[in-house]
Amino acid sequence: MTPIVGEGYRFIGAALALAALLGVTVHPYAAIPFVVLALYFAYFFRNPDRTIPEDESLVVSPADGTVQDIVPVEMDDFVKEPCNKVIIFLSVFDVHVNRSPIAGEIKIQKYVCGRFRPAYKDSVGFENERHLIGIENDKLRVTVTQVAGILARRIVSWVTLDDSLEKGELYGLIRFGSCTEIVMPRNVEVMVEKGQKVVGGETVIGRIR
Image 1 (cartoon, rainbow, N blue to C red):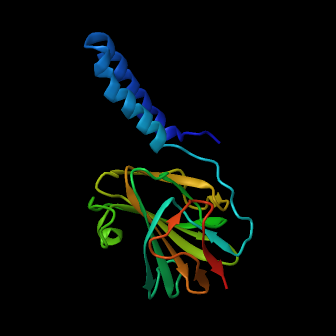
Image 2 (cartoon, rainbow, N blue to C red):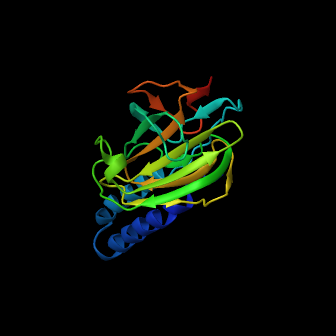
Image 3 (cartoon, rainbow, N blue to C red):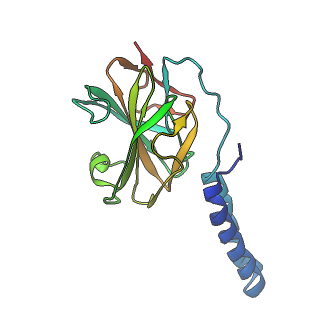
């Protein structure tokens, strides 16, 4: 596993190239902001190692961030039963790679164009650009949605229909500041609270009853 996801190298390279150009043609001090920017890009696109819980009854967080809300959903189009939705807000300082919350196959994939409102707004899951996948195994179905924000103008996905994912496996990222939503059936006990910090791939957010 690389410490920086591949998506980040062109941002880092572009910032360093500008730093070198300005340092040579203008003044060495002119390069400093772009060196700082390159360091931030390296930090933003970081991909830290995670210890994934092996227990098949556990659902892990699909993202790093803060639990913004936990709301009931009367019916989910993929899960096909009443659910709970956990909304995770990612600041520009959080790790932005997304991980599969369970092991399973992708049975639905949907990209919806939309607006780019701030990711902390309550309505962004309905109005903003988003990418949804439905993951299924022999015990459970969940949906996970990457939602773009005011700075997150690009949702990146590395998976497609019928791909198999391990629990905690990387499947995409969102640039730069956004939210991720996971919808779980109500036979999954929600193990997090509003305002709690979560770690993608490690924090247990649900347990099958």
